Every structure is written in structure tokens, then in C-alpha cells.
Length: 220
Image 1 (cartoon, rainbow, N blue to C red):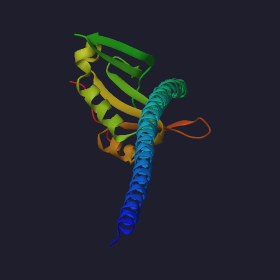
Image 2: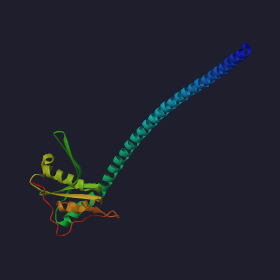
Image 3: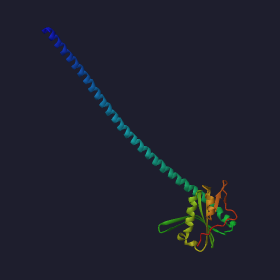
Image 4: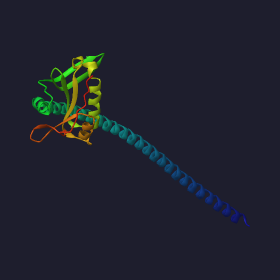
């Protein structure tokens, strides 16, 4: 090979090297730019995830706080209306109770509302009490009577003398009055020996026990 041909070949090789190097540098530059863009994208995604997580946490806290506030408000309303319904029921039952039990054959002639006693830090309240020298009728009043209400009344009657010594030596009968009776609570009350008083839509109170009913004497 001549000297000229050799020089041309070397020049061609160096040209290829330069072009290859330039292409490599360009591709490397593009790769680095792509890596930077990828990092920026990852950073943005990470930031977005953090922001979304924070927003979600704040939203959950707001919802939880709102649920707690709503629940508390509903409990206050339920308590308020429960008290109002209970007092309204007492006001309807009380005036006719004496006559109803006289007709049944228990000659009570005095009536009281909301007798309360406290013993050793414990409290018992009686909604309506009818009595004479020998007998007493304790009436619990509820807007909606449930089986648990019947059990609670029976428990109170069984411990009555601990709170009210005035009933010692007398016959003590129990009654439960309600606008509605859930889950067969009225039948359950009959079986516990209690009088059941119901209120009709016309505001008339009546004793629902049949003529063959024999009330339980809770006195001692």
C-alpha cells in the first residue's frame, strides 16, 4: 500500500472514531437527560404520593371528627326526646292509674310520681307509685317497652325494700306501661307477674292482663 493510501485509511479511521465518539457522547447526553427526567418524574410522583397521603389523612380526620360530632348530637337528641316521651307517658298514665287498679280490685287511693331514694351512693327512682296502708303498685313507664326493661323492673322490685323501707309489710305489685311493646315484651311481662298498661291512639290507658291473671307479690 502506498503512503497516500495509508494516510487516507488512517484519516478515514479517525473520522469514524470521531463520528462514533460524537454519536456516543450524544447518546450518553440523551441518556443522562432521560435519567434526570426520570428522577424528576420519580420525585414528582413521590411528592404527589406524599401530598395525596397527607390529604387522605386530613380528610379521614375531618370525617372521623364529623362522625363523632354527629353521633354525639344524635345521642343528645335521643336522650332529650326519650326524656320528653317518658314524661308525657307518665302524665297520661298517672291520672287514670288509681281508678284502673281500683276496678281491678286493688283499693289504692294515693298516688305519687318520681319517688327517689339514694342508699350508699346508689339510686332508685320509681315513676308512679299507687298505695294504701296494705298495698303498693309500682309502675314503670316507657315509650317503647323492651324485654330488658321488664327485667330491670323485676330487679328493682326485688331490691325495693333496700331503698324504700316504707313498703315493708305490704303487698307490692309491679306494672309496666308503654306506648309500644317490642319483641313480645308485653307477653314476657305477663309471665313475670307484672301488670301491663297500654296506651291507645286516643290517649286511653288500659290494663291488658286477662281476668285470670294473678299478679306476683314482690313484698316481704
